Structure formats: C-alpha cells, structure tokens
Length: 322
Image (cartoon, rainbow, N blue to C red; front, side, top):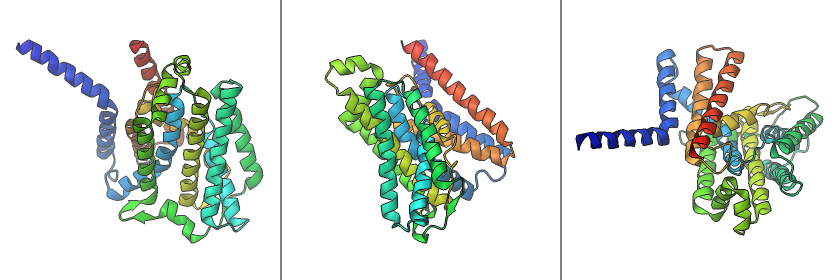
C-alpha cells in the first residue's frame, strides 16, 4: 500500500513538473542572477525588466494564435518597424493628432496581417514564404519613408503610452496585462478559440466539421498584425524616436517566447498563460546577461540555443504524443 502511494506521489510530482516546468525554469534563472549580480533584485531593475518585456508580451499574443493554426508570421518585426516610422511621420511631418495617428497606424498593421492571411488562405502559399516576403517588402517601405533618418519631436502627451505610470505600474505593463487577458479570453471563452485549436490539430477535419477555414485564417493573421501594431506604438512612445530598424530580429524573440511558453510549432497546442513565463524568461535572461557584462554576440548565441532547445523539446513531445 505504501509503495502504491509512493508511486502515485511520484506521478503527481512528474505531472506538476510538466505543467509548471516553465515557471520552475523562470525561478531558477531569477535565483541564479540574484546570486551572480548585486543589482538584479533591486525593485527598480525588476520594474525595468517588466517594462522591457511588455512589448514582447503584447506581440506574442497574436503570434501565438498563428502558431496554434500551425502557421508562422515572420513579418511581425517589420510591422512593428513600419508602425514606428509611419506613426512618427504622421506626428512630426503631418502634425496629426496623436490619437488619430495611433488609430490609423494600428489599422494599417491589421490590414497587413489580413493581407498575409488572404494570400495564405486563397493562393495557398506556405506561411513562411508569404510572411518572409512581406517582411522584406515592409522593411523596404519603412526605409523609403524615413530615408534611414530617425524621426523625433513627438507631442509630450504621446509619451504617456510608453513612459507613463498608473500608480506604481508602468503603462506598457498594464497594456500587456490587458492584451494577455484578451488573448486568454479569446482562446478559452469564445468559439473562435476552439476553431484555432481545431485548425491547428487537423485542418481537413475542421473543414469537414463546417468551420470556415479561410475566415479563421483572415482573423488570426489580422490579429497578429493588430497586436504587433500595438506593440509598435508602445515601443515608439517609450523610445521617443522612430527608426527604420527598431523591430529587426523581434520576430525571433517573439517566436522564442511563444515556444518557451508551450505553444507548439506544429499547431493545436498551447496556452496564453504560459506565454507570460516565456516572455519573462527572455526578459530576465537579457537583463541578467547585461548586468553580468556578457557581450552582445554571446547573448545571441545563448538566445539562439534557447530557441533551438525549446523547439527540439516541442518536437519530441509532439512525437511522443503521436
């Protein structure tokens, strides 16, 4: 009897580790950097980490929806760049009202996402190729608009989005929490969320069950563009300067955060709640390495290795389940 209880206890421990392994990794990282550096656990630094990862967390929600469909969106980084440049140009060169400029640029980002979804659904091109081509096109447009010169001189009221506080909490962190909550609500409480999982699990079966696959793809890629647009606005307000390379490489960080958070690259598996841990792991890792004076290129090696290990683990889990 005692042996059976021990086996049950061990099984519960294994299941707990599987469900919460990402949070255990996060706690281990925090403990390591707290021991290795003097200033990591200082309240100001922790708040800085939260502010830094907020843009990543916002964009990761839309990207997670795309991954759940078994797709990918490599254009999110360039969409963030274009939103920066276009919004900056409207504010400075056209003197547009900040609210109107923000609304127009987020609509533009959503339409770019819709275009990705339309091409993928109707022409049936691979999402990797479509979004890679869109990434290149958008980067070129952003450079043509800015001519490679930073745009600055925004109204003071615009800085509230990226630099303001609600009580002791930075506004970007509040925006991230709201966006993550919306993402979790869509997945867990709406039939759209069930459609995302169904398409990622088996697109043909979803089609036969009556789900309008094309419409779901339009929606998912539009949401990816929408959330990337919001992230771009937050970054622009925080840096107070629009440049033509601000979103460069962000698509890989967003992908890493999602995969670390348990969103399967093969589609149909994942939860928004775990993305929080994935985003925080990247933020803690980056901040801790900076405090330890790790070089930029060494950081690239470590982050790339983290992505490789996360995807390898996901593939092994998928094979085991199959």
